[in-house]
Image (tube, rainbow, N blue to C red):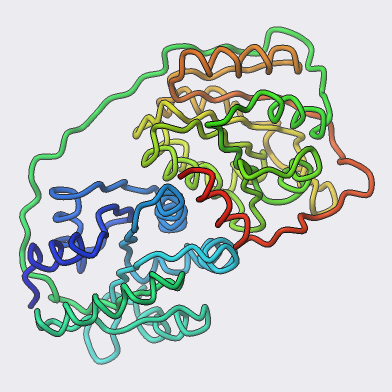
Length: 375
């Protein structure tokens, strides 16, 4: 079995000091080490953990994700449509529940058979983690070489690989909403394009704009292509977690996350994580047109959800319902002066800009120039 503290210290020596993940009994000792000795963000699900770690990587941190193999299926979307096209490398540890030949619970049987096959299909480099300390250190050196050439690397971890590491007392914080405003007027329903022009026009030299997948990113590109911008091309629902990872690790910049109703509903658990970790330099703007605009205009269920109330209940310091672009401008200007984790909700009209194109810069180029801008 591996000495968990020595193994974790070797990870730290290689620069891996930021973790995000979801608990697994096979990984509990490594999780305990990361909480005790490093920065650890507990994600609501494994896909969010991948996005959080990816945001931290954009901010200059070498990041680790920890998960059970059942959760590997939950993060296929960000691994294939965020990390792969943007060439964002993360180091992963995934447990091997349901390993063939060993007794385990029935829900792990199939995943135990296909865990490594899934990694192969996603073109992710991987190895079974050795229980021998010296061999495991060599494996970490090899994994680090792949990370340094923008390739993710995963270790598959068998039962009883890590020796016991006692969890120190965790501080449990309570964050409460301080300001919440509800609907008080008629919604003017501006277009998404006009709304993005307002948001873009208020950025400064320390602002990063992150636009969710679909037509939001495409329209922001047409408003202005900038080194400040990241246009999601996949990983639907992950932009808020990506923003958290960046904002948490780079408190010297302002991170403005531009979300959509369909995307946010897909991974609404991320609101609770954002609310708990309270990155005061993060502004989360939801543009709600109540449809999946990029795929033909099918209805979402956002009309039946009080998202302003949910964000407030999750611990966003400020949660605003606004009705028009003038209020949007005032809210952004106030946030720039006062900060605090803030959620802004605005209903917009359906439809998009005519003859809307797509970004002509590749995701990996967007990543590289954004990192250069951040530095």
